[in-house]
Length: 212
Image (cartoon, rainbow, N blue to C red; front, top):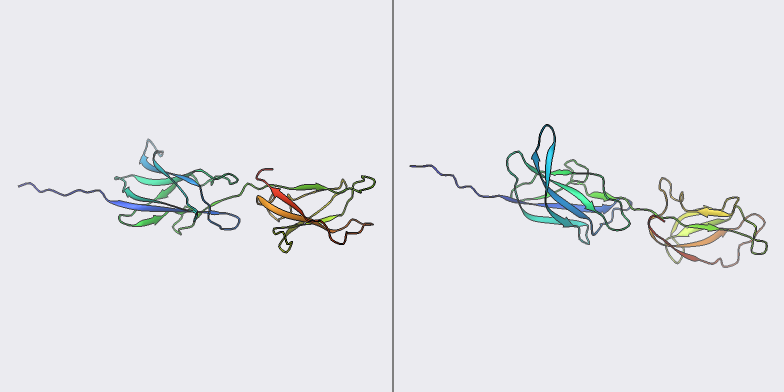
């Protein structure tokens, strides 16, 4: 008689979580490619695109019922695109050790801790100029405070005009080049030397766009 072995395909699920690097909030609309990696010549590997998946409003993408790879093969995920205003993560191919009948969370740090992939925001900038209303002379030393809310209670940072009367938000937040895109509210909170603030300084809404 002939011994036979029943062979069947096993399947597993994989999960990717995507967040914004600055605040840890979920990031929707990030596309990942799922690749099957096979040994190539020398130390190289061949990556074949199997399918793609996109993160939902919770920053999560799940791919179910993925066949376990063959001997010597494994899966990897790679970020393909990010939403407008965000940089693509530079993690490259991240290996996935798929497990039969289980959900595996792909790690954004390339280790076994299950960390989410993080995307950096493409920051923007605002600029202003302060002059004497009568003479047009540039005014140095005026301080403008940037708020995140229209009621001007949540301070983001301050800008101080230079000798040419100009100021910008590039160094408002320490260690960051500019502001996260969105709507901010700006008002003068300290007048230049020899000048007085109006009793009720005007609040200016400013929209900061990515890369501007």
